[in-house]
Length: 205
Image (cartoon, rainbow, N blue to C red; front, side):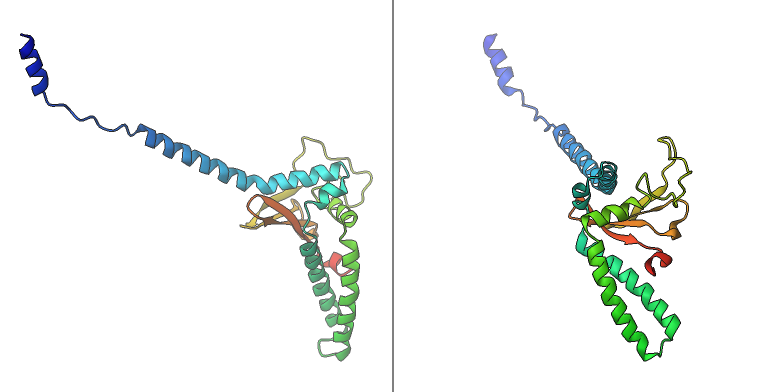
């Protein structure tokens, strides 16, 4: 009897087991979640940079704000706007064919360059950004009687991507008034203030 049982056991074919595919699915799901999480963090990085700038302004920390600024890019951005506005003003006043217009434009450009170089310093940037819409003190148009914005009030600015490496903050009510801030991507995670959108009237001053 025992021999028959052994014979039956030996004669019974073994059934191959299918490999467990669940670990592969779990790995793929975990990878997808990680990629989505990294993408969400990368997408939110300019808002975090804006938060850091606002915190530095509130604490009047010029050094912390300076760490969020690309000074060479910011200087060139402001020079370009001021030079363009002055060129239009000189051309309108003297005429496009006036030979002295080019001389005046070159002189004005040289002077504005020196002024911008001196103005775009850590302390100067604090003053510029402090007049923008991201500051609790900015955007009041000099009206001392205007009440301060409450914590429950809507933001006075809009913030949105203007491209893969560009993020722009502008006034919510009158974007043409100027005071817009332009952040540029530095690497994958970091953003720095690289431009300030000046209105035509402000740039021509």
